[in-house]
Image (tube, rainbow, N blue to C red; front, side, top):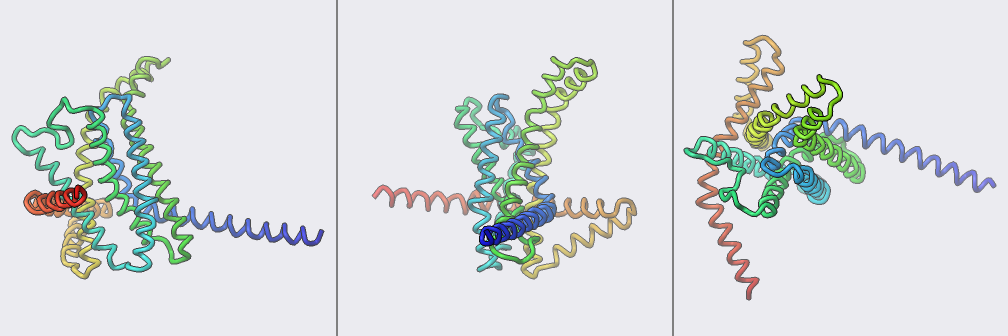
Length: 325
């Protein structure tokens, strides 16, 4: 009997330690996730454009496919790689993030260039509008997951930096909670955004009160404009986040001039305005980060077209020939 009681005491002690560990993981995850709020907002703003143009029946399945790809990005690739690099090669994380930021700048600048090109077609729309719907869906989902990878890398890196030094298992558990929580938050919001017009239509047709029906009609009318605004915000977010990653990376590598100049100008302007200084300083910094991102992206467009793409096709061609032999 005494042995049984001792065993129960041990089990209770283990349960208390486990409960405390869970509390620690959740608390650290909440703190780390809050630091990545800017990137989370960018991720939510970028994603709805990948669903635009599809039938209502395909909207939620596409969001679900992108969400699964996002979880795979975070849990299978970024979490273990981030932990290993942070442990063994911490110095390489910043350059890798800067490459990802440069990619976002390139993609955002490409979309801006399409908008201002004569007779432009939306950069996210296929040139052949008769293109097979299933093939188009595959392209859009692949593009969304690729962009998500860069934003998820930023989110996970910011979160990792905020986690206190501890055991490898604790850091891994905290990052996993951040990954799952943020993915649910982002893609749950995206699902609500893309289905809001259907919800509004149902309210306008089935609402018992006139105010509900009126609100439903208002939602239906507002959604096309809101989606266009979100697509614009998504493009701006790519440039802002990409520029910010590159600028912060330069600072981490010892080149602080651009970072200090931007923050000095932003805080000076905010102080001169004298109202909501914190917000105005953030807005000024984000705007200048976005301008730097646009300039960098415009510089990268011809480099990608004339150097990187030909090299990539050459390497792929040689790989295909080697595989054939």
